[in-house]
Image (cartoon, rainbow, N blue to C red; front, side, top):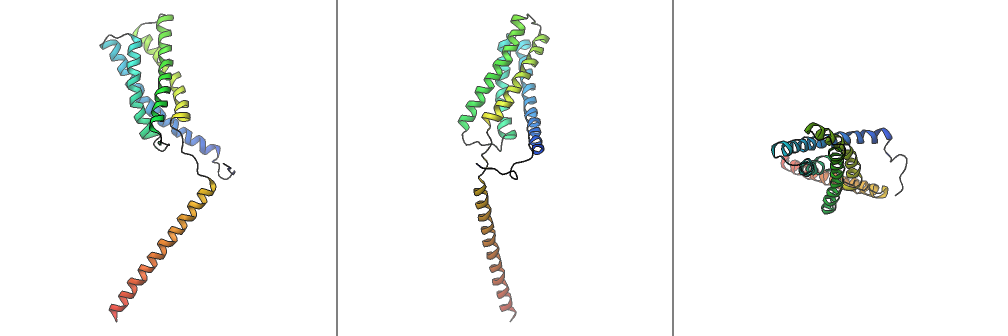
Length: 189
């Protein structure tokens, strides 16, 4: 596809769009973090589960809620033609993110022997931060793909068709006005 310099958005406009996307990603992600930490805390304190099991349970629940936020709010304008592919890739990359997060937690607990609940939460924060960067890049690059840009000729032909349709609609309205005027004059005579 050949693009001209006039059709390319300026860098500032691209950065503004990316900033908005990062903010929305952060809002959805923050809700997932709250869910993740709440479930994690309940699992290790309330249910007495081991930290890795608690982390996996919490992350799986957060992944499910995040998908809904990403699909129906942040990336709602992205190509959704292949939902099966999208969900599969989302689960794969979310799983890799979960492995990153759980790996940091496991390293902290089993190698560094930092196993108090607060040390585990600290390790979870670090693991989650690294996994979040990975998820952002992978989701926007491979999971929620942008719709392809239309070819310049297709845009021109679409604009021409729209102009033709507008012209036909305008002509139809003019004819209707003439007919109503003729009826009005006929009644006046």
